[in-house]
Amino acid sequence: MPELPEVETIRRGLAAHIAGRSVASVHVHHPRPVRGQVGGPVAFEAEVTGRTFDIPARRGKFLWLPFTDGDALLVQLRMSGQFRLEDPSTEPHRHTRITFRLDDGRDLRYIDQRMLGGVDVSVGGAVLPPEIAHIARDPFDPLYDIHAVAHDAHRRSSPIKSVLLNQRIVSGIGNIYADESLWRARMHYARPAASLEPRDIAALLDTAAEVMGEALERGGTTFDGLYVNVNGDSGYFARDLDVYGREGEPCDRCGALIVREPFMNRSSYFCPRCQRRPRR
DNA sequence: CTGTGGTCCTGTATGC
DNA sequence: TGCATACAGGACCACA
Image (cartoon, rainbow, N blue to C red; front, side):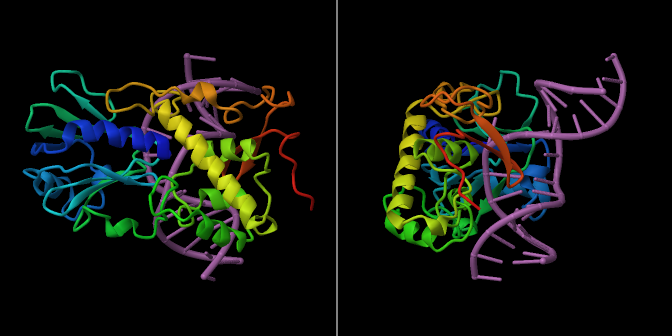
């Protein structure tokens, strides 16, 4: 569920509280989120106990919690993963899957309703986990090369939205921010990437970075309890969305009614007047 | 090689 | 009320 702004909000929240903390104990409540661990939950608990966290890092929607020994905890939140830092005396959320007891007496709780994501020990992954070496840099990465991305995209036959969602081309953009960016750029989601000039694609990428930057300032987008920061609080960007989730409501720009269409097994929201469908 | 669709899960909303 | 269906902020993997 979380996209770049939400994951970055979580990363910052964790950075303020777990950097320098060591893990006193670990308890895995459900095996699925550690399914990648050889030896299962028991081995995971033993692997992580006693290690010390460094400053959390992120690429796109991937989060990792480096240990001071050079390894890391690689986290894929996918649709419903979240972290909360809470006092052990508070009642855990019903979907709490892993509890990390820290040496300051607080609990880091990994909560995940659907468990599509997971947590893995990444050997040697402190700087960049090898498991996500194929994930492209995101627009907030200092080494992100927007012109290289635009030229790559320009060679693609697929719809421009598929390009925005392809984490091997540019990472961090998900279904919400893809739709919001396309609306701002007045571009239809089905427009073939190859039909666009690299400069137009670069402008779209700039727009995507702009939208995600604004969302980050608001603490991310929340519709329900499935995205919250480490304190359990919601972000406020949902009230600033222009098209996502607004089927049947008037476009903020022209007043035409927002349309929802199926696209790649999910939904695309757009303004039929501002964002003209490509011919053919 | 590239691009698309099914799949992994649980929960909520909606319609009959 | 019960039941069925659709849908949900993602990404991997098989297959065309």
